[in-house]
Structures are given as C-alpha cells and as structure tokens.
Length: 291
Length: 313
Image (cartoon, rainbow over all chains, first blue to last red; front, side):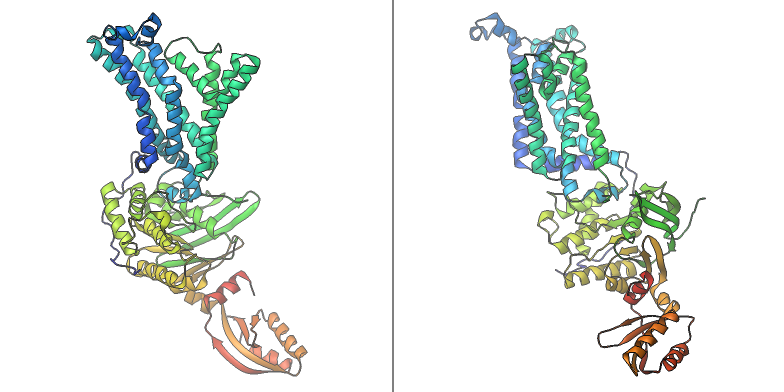
C-alpha cells in the first residue's frame, strides 16, 4: 500500500469550543448500538408492553363493546385506567426484563470496550473532561430508557383523553404527568448507572453482559429464597425489581406491594447509584498508573 | 511565578512522583520548532513527561507551558492545539476508520461535516484511503499505527506528540511511517515531539533531542551540537608489551575522564572530553609503554550520545 496517495493540507477552519462536548459521544453510542441486529430486535420488542397497555387504554373507553369478554367485575377493573395502571406498566416484570436486555446489548461495552481497546487516552487527549465522557455514555442509555418510559407514559394519557373525548382524566389526576416524568427519570438513571458500574468493572464485554443480567436475576432469586424461608417482607430489599416496584408505588400514589418503608428502597437504589459514580471516578482515567 | 513564552514547550523544575517512586526530578527544558526526539531508558520518565505535557498528570511542583498555554490551567486549549498518537493500540470496536477519525476531529472542536471531510483527506494522506470503510478490528498492526497518526492529525494540530510511532512495525512499515513524520515536520509546519526507544528513528527524523535518565534531564540540544560539544570520539587500536600493560593504559584513560568501549575485534572507542587534549592520550600510552597503531576521529552516532548521557557502557 502506497503512502501519501494524497498530500497533506492544512485545515483552514477554526476549532470551536463545544457547548455540549458529550453530545458526539452520545450520538456515536446510539449509532453503534443500532448497527447491531440483535439490539434492533430487542429494542423493537421492548415496545411490546407499551402496545399492549395502549390497547388496554382503548379497551377501557370501549368497555361496553367488549362486555361479552368480561364476565366479572375484577376483569373490568383490570382495564380501568388510573394511577395503578401506570404503576403496573412501569414496574411490570416484562418491561424491566426488556430494559435489562437492552442494557446487555447497548450498555455492556460502553466503558468495557474503551478499557479493553485503550481508547480512553485518545478521548482525553481531546478537550473533553471525565464528566463529559461519563455524561456522553449515560446519555446513550438514557435515550433508550426514556423512549421506553416517558414516551409511552405520556402517550397513554394523551390517548386516554383522545379516546374519551374529554379532559376529565387529566383533571382527575393532574399530578400524573409529573409522576411519569419523575419515576421515568429515577428508573432510567438507576438502570443507566447500574449498567455503567458493571461496564467499568471489567474489560470484557461478554463478562459484563452476563453480570448485568445475573446481578438483576440473582437479586430476585435471593429475595425469593429468603422470603420462602423466613416469610419476612423486608427481604424484598435484596431485590432490584422489588425496590423499583416500591418506588413506582410511591411515585404513582398507590399502595406499596411490600410492607416495607419506601425510604429503605430509595436509600438502597441511591446507594448503588453513588457506588457507580465512585467506581467510575476511579476506573475512568486517561493514565493507567502501574505501581 | 508564571511563565509565558513563545517557545513550543517550556518546563521549569517539574517534579512528579507515583507514590514514593520519583518519576521526574526537577526537569527544566525548552525547545522551539522542528522535530524533537525524547529519549531515555525504561523508567526514565519519558511517558510521564508526555502525560504531563498533555495534562493527563499534574506535576507536584514546577511550571510549564505548551504552545504558550499553562500545563496546569489551560489543559483544554493544549489538547485542542496538539495531536497525540499513543503507544498502545487504540480503537473503538465496531467502527470504520472514517467514522473513527471524524469522531475525534469533532471531539477536538471541528464542525461535524468538516470533520468528516477532513477525515477522508487525512486517511488518504496516511495511506488508508482504500481501507477507510473497513472495520477497525480487521486492521493489521501497521494500519493501526497509521490510523493513530490520522486521528492525531485530523484537527490539524500545531504540535504532534508521537509515542513510539514505529512500534510493532515491519521494516517497510517503519520506513513508511518515518517518511510520513519527516514529511509532516519538514513541509507541513507541524512541530513534533517524538518519543522512541529506537535511536535510529529519532536520528533520521529529529534535529533536536532530549535525553532523560532516572527522572532527570541528561542532555538536551541539537544532535549535531551535542555530538561536537560534549566529547570527541576516537577509534583506536593498541599494542602493549603485555595484556597487563594494555589494561593499565585503559585504566589510565579513566583518570582522564575518558570513557571507552572495546569491540570484539579489539577496536577501542574512546570518548574524550572536549576540554582534554588528544596529546594526553599519547602521553599515557608512552608512560604505559603501549603503541597506538591506529587512531581515527569518528562520527558520533546518537547511540553513542545516548550511551554517554545515561552512563551506559
């Protein structure tokens, strides 16, 4: 291969100071995620619960038309759109599981690959700081997670009003949009930091993928084992999913699924977020110091 | 004390330690323009110095400027104005060379479209034009080196930091990378700080050299001047009445502060300090009853200079 097929020329432009230096990192991360077929498949599948719940919103307004399908009042209650309906959407097993799968495909390698391929030093040889780097990586995951939480949540409200032909729903629950935004933000930030914590702990993307999945499932199994043995609801604090369900109940003002103060769940999930930030501060550096 | 200078790099009394291990111990140096080689044995502090210049590490004490920007306070400006080609393989999995190069151009502050256009130009320049859409994971060692050079050049820096640019390359690949660096330094108005263990690489590209040893500055200046000013190199062959006489002669050379090396074919390379008279050599030979049968003033190579600076025989 010959060199200098074309001569070097100076660039006559001016380098700018980016207002959001993290944005190119985010854009690249999203672009690279969509290059993977497996990710596209899982991401599309993650909208399935939203479509099912949207159908539920439609059925709730046409309940008379579907009368022959519902023989009991409890099944009719299932299609009642109220804050509990939103809580169910945001904390149902399948949505949380699909979010974890998205993290496996889109998030596992975000930092692990940069550690493996030594690319941190070229990132930091540019005018960006550690904060911009982490923010850029977080924003990749937040983009996917907020698409699965905020967007469907707000669409449910809009469609409910469209199908009902009135604003009665929003007048009954004027705080609901804020709850959707608040819980979506909490859920997305937690899952993002959980993923990046594990991604920054190892250089092997496959190992990180297994960890993301295993820690989530193992916490649930651990809760199941202890609960079966001791019949004590406080063991729900061991489970990531149960803690998220507790928080969801708090945000949507419905009864907690476990008889445990919600503040404990909040503290546990916040502690995981803080650990994640501390680990990233330690692991993400431009220089590997070998002592 | 603040130093503001028009020199490319100026450092004053830089100290840095990794815990208890002193990496840089009072480094003061300056250079302006052209290509400068950064030399030193393992653990001399070359990489630490490069990382301090880039702002990756903060010196414990001392002052410094790169292109007039303070190494403590204006790191972003330094990083915008310099290009860095690291020693290790660096890539982002799943990317092609154009996206990779354009991405780092954009991170440096180039508009997106401009960065993409420039990435194509730079990749052609380093010889990756045909392979620019291939996934980086499929690149050979030589192609990865060129890619690293491309990402360092994409934002048209005023100063390039090259850390072992010819590492892991076959002779032809090495020659091509050196040609590129020579082209950049001689025709493109880009200054280069080249950190390498391969002395011949530095000798072929750089006019100036900085030699570090044990965290201290061992020598600095133009290679041609360092060769002349510090000492003169002579090659000589001797014949004594006995081996003891010859050994005594060599021992006396040390008294003259003259370092020497003996090759397998008994050629002696003597580094005579600049302030010593050549006649002193003959006087010692006469006193020790040793004949000097061959004496030639030799051109000092960078290896000789390096060996002398770091005190390695």
